Image 1 (tube, rainbow, N blue to C red):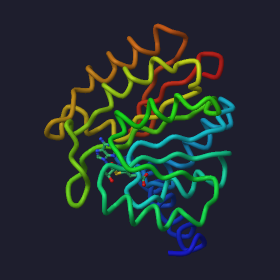
Image 2 (cartoon, rainbow, N blue to C red):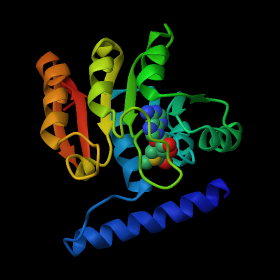
Image 3 (cartoon, protein in one colour):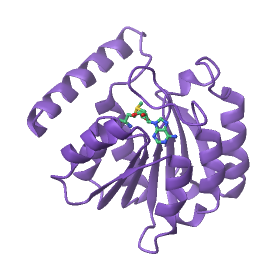
Length: 206
Ligand SMILES: C[S@@+](CC[C@H](N)C(=O)[O-])C[C@H]1O[C@@H](n2cnc3c(N)ncnc32)[C@H](O)[C@@H]1O
């Protein structure tokens, strides 16, 4: 799919979301609506680098490459990684990484040139061809790992909040909140939920 086709499809999804809100039947935002939230947080916090756990087809990574200086995206499944890496190769500022985000995230953040990051935690088992790592949804463990790099982080978005405590193997919503509060809210960050995403931002940008 070309960038223009993807943009038109995204606008269609966004229009559907607006219709859902108008009818009070809004549940899971379209990926373009999620991108608009990420871009709003980028502007508010001054984030320059986007780091994504869970590449899948690379749609969000590709969109984010047009607004962030650099994009890192991590995919556990070999076939999904290879397909997405091929698609994303046309964007020079994207680095596609094959591996478990729990292990790859700290490696990316150890890089001295990486700072002012917005992290998108979306690397979980979602059925079908998607990978199932040691954990179906490692977001709580990822928050713990990320807490060591707090000074490099402007914001974190944890996707699919509705699935926590409802999908098999996912931690509960309260465990996710506990992790976000213990590792971030107690250290100068705000935590909130907006459009099915848990959002952590540095306090001065709330
Ligand atoms: C919901 S999809 C990601 C969608 C993508 N972020 C987007 O916005 O287009 C979840 C992806 O995470 C991958 N995944 C599952 N566990 C993972 C892990 N531990 N580390 C990295 N990726 C993982 C799955 O294979 C799947 O491709």
